[in-house]
Image (tube, rainbow, N blue to C red; front, side, top):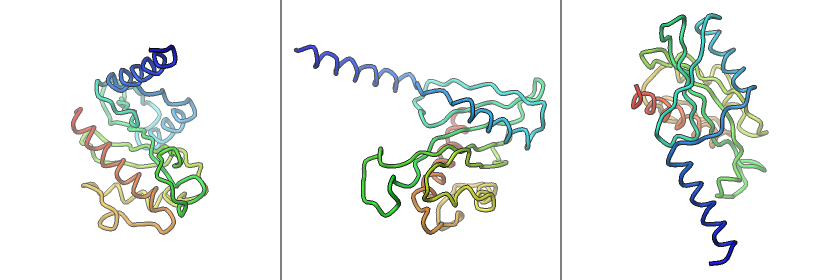
Length: 179
């Protein structure tokens, strides 16, 4: 076995270990600040966050408990989702790397009822219509979300709509599983 083969095997091993222990990169400060501002609008200025740690591999989701004084007020779930493909939604490419990422937050109360879903960062030129507050209010109705049933489709934002809809469902399932 040559040196390159050993390096590749070590790299693959590190990836597998990272996935097993649920490692994911921390959120950048600017996203934490946006999360804080969104939560303050719901619960007021006297909140504090505590990041939850868990043993599952959930690399696209960051879960925070929101406390007021010593009482649990709710949860903030910040997630990464895939938006429109680089070059536009009509470009055919199936590699995940050809999609642009965006971040969104779901704020829920202690009963897991959605208080707000908000797009924190959307940098693509395509599909940005999902950041519309009126469209995002659909998630406050509760239940399992399905595009064209209880979530409106948006022409030109199909990938982003499907991604955030599935992502919010995943967030709620994960929260229910953990709490």
